[in-house]
Length: 342
Image (tube, rainbow, N blue to C red):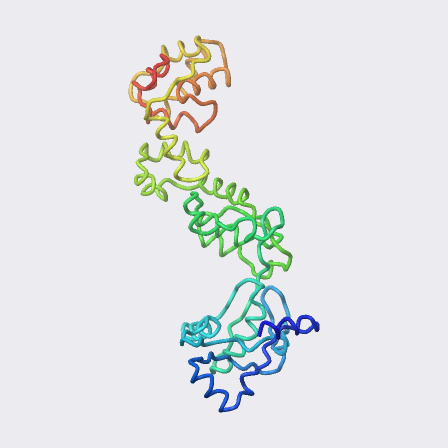
């Protein structure tokens, strides 16, 4: 068969199975069976043009003479996907099939299978295949990409749905918080035939924006599993500075584990230590405290905020400190203001 395909291609013809097995004599069949050769079974296609109105590609017509009769049953008795999927779709009452454009010709053969089994083919749509950000096929550039790997990287399911609901259209990809929002903004007629480009960086930005608007109750159980405390106040403080829920643990450790403070401005830090409000440390403490420091030093804005951030977190950027202070607690705050690892 390989030689036949090569000859057909050399002659400019599609490499179609020539149905040679149908020409075997009973004697030849008996000889093959005696030699232990078991047959596989093909579905004989009708030599017509199968046409349908594709939800993405519009009017599609496939001359069946350009296709080989598909194998539907292997010699060992295993059923091939081509047949199994049709039977399964009929059994479950599937009404629509949406898949990649590389299955367009397969769909033509399956339409005939649906009809041969007494069914009606579902409505079909074939999307353009995704390419990477540089235009290369995903299989070449992102071979390890999978839903499992995205989950492990901290990508929210709703971020993937938000992207897939728009990629391939001219509409902007917008972060959504629920599947209802994704569905309400989905319009299959907006998808074109041009090759859309998938950029992991874009997905990361969408994920971060979604987390920035995610309410505490939707992540509370996951934070507990990670060992992250601080409740809603802490989550609201860090959610705008993380790319995945797992990163909240890093900031919780910054707030609760020993760090090495960076003392940049002795005067500001001394004023901070002297003016830390009495009583419980709450989210409101930050505003009152920084006002007192500004009054004591005559400084404002970044000149106050940056030395405090460096002393309290050891880092020059991060979440709003007003939500981290309650988790740090008074003793740790004062110790860090003294330059102690706490």
